[in-house]
Length: 364
Image 1 (cartoon, one colour):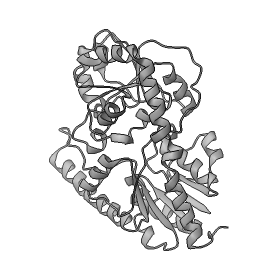
Image 2 (cartoon, rainbow, N blue to C red):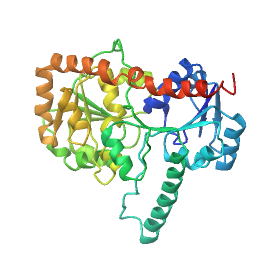
Image 3 (tube, rainbow, N blue to C red):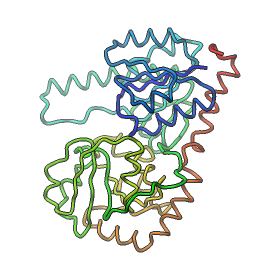
Image 4 (cartoon, rainbow, N blue to C red):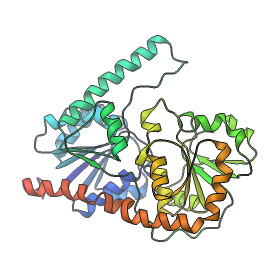
């Protein structure tokens, strides 16, 4: 059995738990995995897959031809970058099962005052063309995956739905034992430090009082961070193991999703990989009041939701005063609902068993 896993978005695997764990789940069920990725893949990941096709310099038609030559049993796409390559293939390759494991909801481009009218108009045209391709691809899929009911609703709002829709949180495998690392003071925020994530945070950074924050990201931070002496800035791009050790040193994590204009970011819900990374390490979280995520944290007492940065100090004190309570809630809820192996089991069983039920794999 062969599965082609499309990863044309090109983001590092250490920030994409679904993709890395997807490979593991497919391998455990007897499928070889052919990874299509635009660039080099680290040595650890190369050992996990059967073959890597570097698509960085390949045209879409060439990639399509390679997929057809492999003639896989299963093809999984995750983002619009994958769809632009594969949108016609479900209607051509009738003996291959196609799936849309959606990790980024494709939404209209957010307006930018730096762009002139023509640039904005062209972006809208490109969006409509790609949205059409997305709809064509989904029409040929056996099923799609989204993270929760909120994300399913937003996906439908932007024109994508399917009668067979799985809901799988963008979570990690549960970590049985946290890394043994020296403890660090304060709280930690990790990930993108761009305006799309931290816009409102940056505008009100001067409201932070008596809280030490480490902000670690892979892109350059905004100059506004220098306004707050309590913020320690680290620019780094770590492997998954190194990243796990780094954030494990802190007791509490901060999450922030700011841009209300972007439905994919603001309505993050259970698509937040960072949220589950921290919970898998039994770290309580503090998050701004964004749809889906805030409700989940309040419902299961996994941390504290704040309306503004002026409430950050009180949120930290509340968690520290009841730390074991939050940790126990996280452990119970993670094992019961979030552990990726459990949450995704039925989906992977279904897609692999379907190949075996319909007929013996073309490659066995």
